[in-house]
Length: 117
Image (cartoon, rainbow, N blue to C red):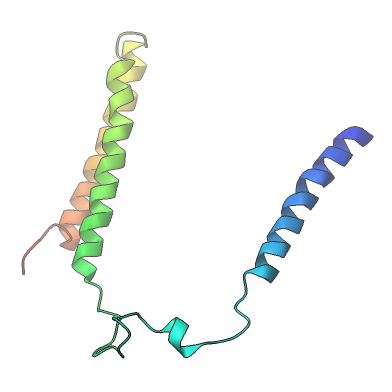
């Protein structure tokens, strides 16, 4: 019992010490204008380095990630087709596909799939 408690306390103590040291050592002590400005061949920048981010591009990237994860979740369903109970496999597959179709309908209904306005 004491050994388990000691292991748990050490496993919490060591990461806390490392995180504290990393936080203390990684702080910038001196705020320097030259270090915080963008580098353009030694000259002052002509315009702001912060360009406006396209929200449409971000939305397309998130939708791509969602569909990519869906494909990764569908592939094992095909692989376990022969080794599983047919009724349970069909039910779970149809439920999963219905959830995906519901999400696709919601995205379509909200206008997220309209690429051009």
